[in-house]
Length: 470
Image (tube, rainbow, N blue to C red; front, side, top):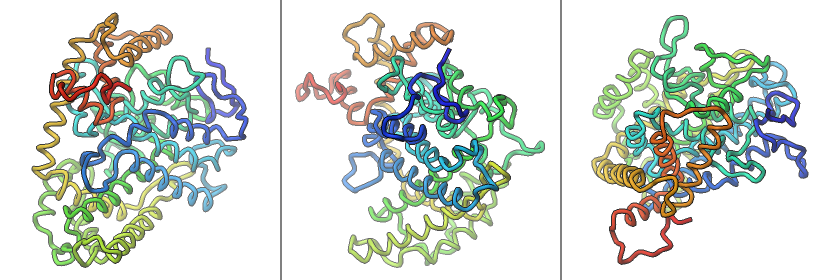
């Protein structure tokens, strides 16, 4: 049985690394540091945010994005704590109420830690390869990283042994694959897309169910498995909003300054017909049963026009000043949008959510759905598809020629399953999950290099010390 060193429910860990800290850090400060110093977090510097990390322009990658999500989330959490003490507790014990900013910051750092090389682009590839074995989901992979795959001194079987409150904050989608097949309903109606307490995706694999149950235990000690049990914690809600804010604002910065999003032209197109049609056929269809209003979206677009740059980006000091001024104004607006709901939850102003969605859709319209990026993404998908197939072919548990890390992942997986009495369908599923875990732990350069080695591409220029070797 686990030994719990902390006495408060929110501070409990499932392992044995929660003793008194020599430096006097709180349990949640220790969580933050464990995530920050982990190898899976560091590898995010080599993982795409939107465009490839090799681009010549200075663009955000998953690491810089995660740092900013953590900072935005922390600042909002601090404001809520300072303004609402006594009337609102963020769903924490009163003793831990002021730790809320640390919990949100830790969740922000970890929220993308499960993204594979090339980000969202290849999630469908891994999902298809794992279709018979529960699939692949970046958020579920993040939870698997912090509970199983990351390495921490003192935890022999893997994982960062985070507190219950931090694990719950990382669970942006606190439900499994089967639950995600059904929409969440409130009073027999679909939850509005602006209700940040719920999400559409799923956030854990069945192999991590024990850790999920530990994370979701309530202050009463009870566990909910009904629709209300799929509700995010206040910290997860705030982390999710900080993620949207960072995505909306900083990607806009990247692609205006690189010449792809003509923000300076938007003032002259208050009725952007082509853009609005794109939105109508995209998120308008996706959210049509969840109260999305195209008219409200158009109003939000109009509200944003006055703060848009007036001239084309040239890289001058004035351009940088004007763009920084716009970003500051947007983040200030979005940070003030989060407010307490009831005694322990969070809601986000609906108008602010529409404005954030406008900015996100501008990036989709001008960048993500560009033919050039789509072509590059097809190549990235093919790299991951072939990597998975080749590794499955050559990997056998006793094969000394397989990468050591892959063999370790497989061996640790078996140890986890024996300890937790978890049974997989067969050994093929175990090998497939191990290969999936291994691919995910690569940076994009490592994935490309390993692909070249396995496929015999560029071998004459290669080295026994491949980029994937470490």
